[in-house]
Image (spheres, helix red, strand yellow):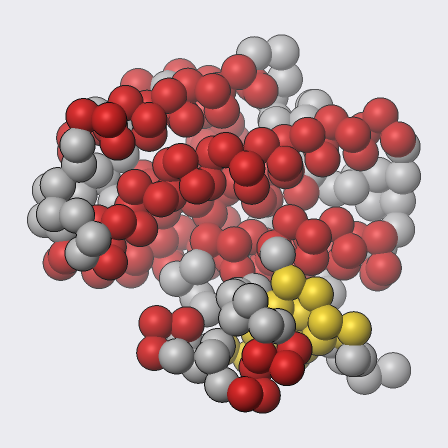
Length: 223
């Protein structure tokens, strides 16, 4: 059977979350880098697969799927069904899905949107409203770690893999994570436990350097 192809952009945290899963599961995928900043996701060929022209995008033998959190769950169900990262237990899956929905609908747009506006040049400094929103997003995220070491229980799941690249990127863009005790503890645990952490952090460092070239103060305003 042909190997699925993953279209990704290395600086994209959602793309990197899928790469973390590939590493954890030991999957073999054909990795094809596309630069969304230079229009490579807006070609006619790419938009036939994904009219929303976003990364990551998965081509599993003609089955096209985008949205990183959907790709995470699909890859486990399709290639490692029942794996602890996304177990076939309804309540466990519900807990994981709850975090994924929160990330997609609240945390990522509220928090990473701040980085995106500075990165794109849409703003040159953060307003008080943006600072408050970003801080609240981090505080809200911490509530998931009140009772558990990880975001959906006592084991790493795709919920953690979905969030880790965003948090890692923020750290290397200047966020002082020690101000969020539970998040910081989780992050340090992931540093030791997630197989692809070192590779992901190397990209986060590159993103941080690029970010500071555009916004020299980085995320210092959030600290």
